[in-house]
Length: 336
Image 1 (cartoon, rainbow, N blue to C red):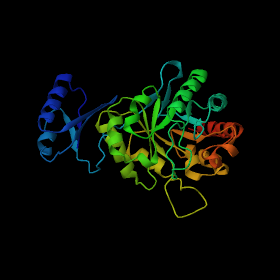
Image 2 (cartoon, rainbow, N blue to C red):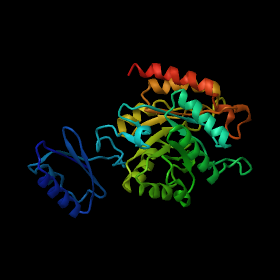
Image 3 (cartoon, rainbow, N blue to C red):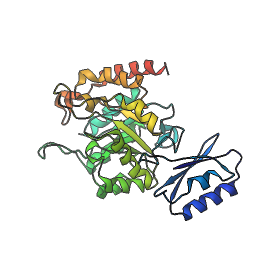
Image 4 (cartoon, rainbow, N blue to C red):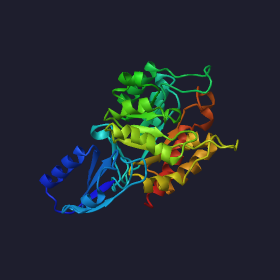
């Protein structure tokens, strides 16, 4: 349920209403825009008399929301959320018209590799550096990442280039190791790891939440709700393709999810064309299509030697190829 206040309502009137609503046993999500203030009621709202609420002098109108995701719902928060990553002159904003490209290797392999790639992608227009330190792999015999050492190397790359770093967390037990990671990624396999999501919700650090392998938009937004219900609203959604029966691409990139999510939610949404397609030759076209569809950013895998990459070399661009993609995306962005 949402209650929209009339313009000109005083702080005392607003706070008195909020105190009364909380006494009814519901949680409150306050969204104060330039032209209106919206009070979102979270929890069991069946005990709230909607006619009584509508009759209050300070209420413009009251609407019940049937969607189970409340905090992530655009009706709770009509304006786009802007997530700021990093600090100082290197801070990056995503959402609300701010577009960013995250680029880097699937896995951190060595100091020379990650710093060299970081320098290359920054020169080509990337504003954040991705790199896997902990890698979830289907086979237990595949390379699992350098773990803590990989995080240290990412920090060195940040020192060398100024790029904020993005990397995936696998377990809540690793949270202490991620204290100075600028953007924590929750991978597709952990999208419904609800205990991890709740712990991330207790932070105030930006979270990149990837869509699950076979998840609906509702399930995806409900996972965002888990994080937001604990108080962390700094969430960026990432469409990375969903599983299909067609063997020609790794996944099916759901471009329609971009405008649909923007209708349903105020959270920014970016696209991962690398994991979605699994093929280097398709990354450029899907990056351009995602940008044209209104995505708030891209996350692209780039490797200096894809043929010998320890993970996902087939979908990784070379720095030169990434530079071409970045330039074409920049031209499309000029149309917005």
